[in-house]
Image (cartoon, rainbow, N blue to C red; front, side, top):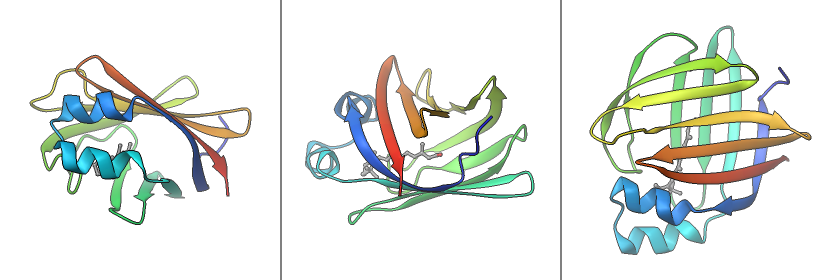
Length: 133
Ligand code: RET
């Protein structure tokens, strides 16, 4: 599949609110979060990925090896410990985040030279699209 690597700027963001409500994010933080222009910086070193989500409010970094389960602490998001596993499903890099929330995870893929991201939690789907910076 096309490489996910690079610096990507958000151009659309649908239902971040529903996703954040499902995560239990407070109304105050949700209001700030909805205004943010998020950036993704995705790097790959061998079989290891580093995905940075940045904004002028909060940053979040996760690194993992595809196919290797890891402990993730969602610091600055909902501050939860989850057991995560990232795999390729066709052209999609898919993460399952096992923890107190059901059906939690995400999928990243490239379509039309854009980075597409879906975030899942408890039946809510947030859809974000990023263009290459
Ligand atoms: C903000 C503001 C604070 C509250 C929440 C946020 C959402 C962050 C998200 C990050 C997703 C990261 C992923 C990384 C893995 O590759 C905007 C930081 C909840 C949705 C998918």
